[in-house]
Length: 129
Image 1 (cartoon, helix red, strand yellow):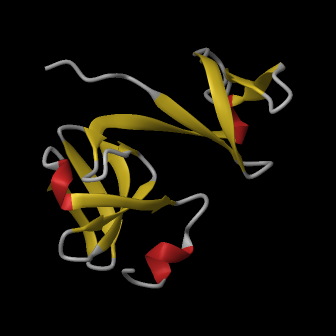
Image 2 (image 1 turned 135 degrees about the vertical axis):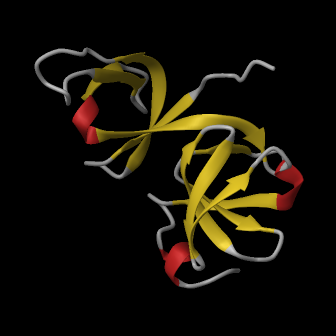
């Protein structure tokens, strides 16, 4: 099965989401070189340096409410445990109240996206909803 490749981007400096229009990364002498191209609220195309942007990849899975699950999302597991998706392969690595663990995300009906690490970091500290 093919997985849809999508990204979302967080502007670390301005603490806001970037409407991604394109992605460009250069490899070479500087590992932080590259750019993310996004559309501003005024509809203008803007280039963001890659080191000022947090990129999150779509896992290809939706939660029980049909919300796309991305790296950096904070999810609530059926047991009411709260965890963050760190990276995604066939499994997701989480960091949560019970420590680090791996979990198969293929059954999205077990999970609910309740926020993300950029807008809602307090969800990881305060326990489950």
